[in-house]
Each structure stands twice: as structure tokens, then as C-alpha cells.
Length: 430
Image (cartoon, rainbow, N blue to C red; front, side):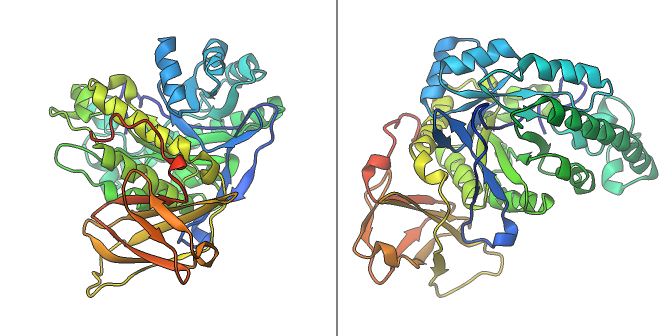
């Protein structure tokens, strides 16, 4: 859910692809099955293939925009040509939002035509959290009065079901009609993305998935009374299933404290994700198949050190760009332990190769330590020294394997050299 302008939800979205470059599709997998994965769409810029790292904020200050771009953010939300010009000036790309729920197709066509020739335009955004707006949105009770009781959707009352079917049919027909107009007018065939809240109604989401190229989901779990970051991977895989594992999944993550969004959400205490929590969420999404990471809420940030922690993380991801666009190597992770708990999520692993260099990403999805994490299937790395980025740990691979330890919800990234370590250290201790 996002900040509401006392009507529908604010906005969110993400994207990629350049006008003169065709989209590259590659299979991404980790230690999850092929059936849980979709294909991955990457950005193309100046002959380079880039993993999407996006931000919903387009700062008015050019110096700030440049700072963001230099910190690895390569996608910004834009409203028109002037915004796209500014994004292009910092060597980044942008996406433009379209009111695909608009019944007047001519309005949508005019918007498309106004920006479609811009070199920096990467993707088309559909209406944000549109399914939420006529199903679970609390404003249907609190603001519009469509629901007479707060829990009507949860109880699936006749009123809620009839309203959602009526409104959903109207909106989804308009979306389908306008997407067909995009396909006709955009000779570059930029991808179309729709983003939803993580608890959006799947029946309605499934009804538009065939028409779009990318489905996205936003999740902001760090609050005063809950910091449930462990389910990021679950949500990423779930959204893959919603897209029949044939659609790209973009994850929109938290870059704000809920109290900064105003009184509507009732949050009073400042609670930001720590750097390690933000880092976990990003890598857990990646090892579970996310094809892009986007941040929402940065315009509301009041703490400069928290902002710096986000930029430190995007810089870290940007440093790994050559690996993030490569296919995964086939490896295995085992937990050699005395006790296995039924509700454990376990440890996820992703291994990627770029030229002669390799990285191994390990993510402990459990809120308890694992002291016998064995990574095997590394015969190609026998005799290779793997160094922990942002740490002192290192291993020489023997017998195609090595064993390490992971603290609760910890991420470890090993590489064949420290050259893959970002030099943006400020904010990592937030």
C-alpha cells in the first residue's frame, strides 16, 4: 500500500529497455526450480546490458539527480519529455506512467505519442496498485463509503464482490484496450509493466498478466511493531507464480519510514530499515528470481544517513552489474546441522560467472544462525580463492565445495577479487 491522496493510491513502478536496442532475455535461476522462474528483461544502454536499479523519485535538484545516478540508480520515474531529458543528461533511463484504466483511449494515445520518440524512455507503466483500488483498499470504507463495514473484503460480502466485479470489469477492459493502443503506436515495442500491492487479489491480477510484459509487487515490511523482512523471497516467488512463471517480476522495496507518510497510516514512530535489512531484502529478492530492484518513498526521507544507506546499497548492486545480467551456474547448498526445524526457509544461493570472475551470493532466510552451510557443485572453482566482499572471510574451493556460517537473516557475497567491492562505504553502518 502506498501514500493516498485521499482517493486512490499514490504511485509506483519500474522498468527498462532503450529505444534503439532490442530487449535481451536470459534465464535466471538460483536454487529454485525452473518452474518458479520467468525470463529476465534487462536494460540496454550504450551497448551495455544493465540490471535495473530504479527509484520512484525524480529530484528537482540536478545535483541530487546526478548523485543518485552516480550511486548506481539507472531508472527514474518520469512524467514527460522534460523529465526524460534530465534523466538522459545523467546517463540514465526513465519510465512513463500511463492511465491505462482511462476510458478515453484518445487521452492515452496523446500521452504515448508525446514521448514515444525519446531515446531515454525505457518502459511504459500502467496504473499503480489498480486491483487494490477496487478490492482491498481501506479507503473504500474510510473515504468513499463503498463498503459499509471495514472488513467487507475480508469477509467477501455480497456488496464487496458485486462492486469488485462491476468495477474490475470496467477497469480491466479499459486496460486491455489501451495496451493494444500502445502496441500499435510504439514501434520500439517497449515492455509494459503493472505493479500491485503484495496482498492484491490474485483473481483480478491474473486477468491482465497475459497482456503485459512485467508484473511487479511492492512490499514495505519494516514498521514499529513488525520487521518481517524474511518473507521477501516468498513474495518474489509467489508473484512469479501469478505470472505463470513466464513474466518478469520486479520488486519494489522500502525507502521510507511509515511515520513520514502522514496521519493516514497512523504510524507515529520513526522506523527505518537498517542497512543490513535493506541489503537482505534486495539480495533475497534477487536470489528468488527478481529481475529488477526499485525503491519507493525516498522523497519523504528525513534522515540523511538512511538515504545514504540506500545509496550505498545501490552502489553495491551496481558494482555487481556484470554478474547480475548473467545466467546462474548450477550449484547446490546444504545445511549440515544437528537440528532441522520444520518452518525453516533455509539458505538460498546464486552463483554467477562473468569472464574469469565469479560471485557466490548466500542469503540466510531464517531468523536463526546456520553454522554448516555447504556450497557444492563448484568444481570449476577448485583452487580458487573466494573473498567475502565487505568482510575479511575467504576460502579456497576444494573438492568443488566450501563451508561457511551465516547469522540470522545474513547475506554474504563472495567474489574472486575485491575489485567487485563498491567504495561507497558511508551509510553501511546505519
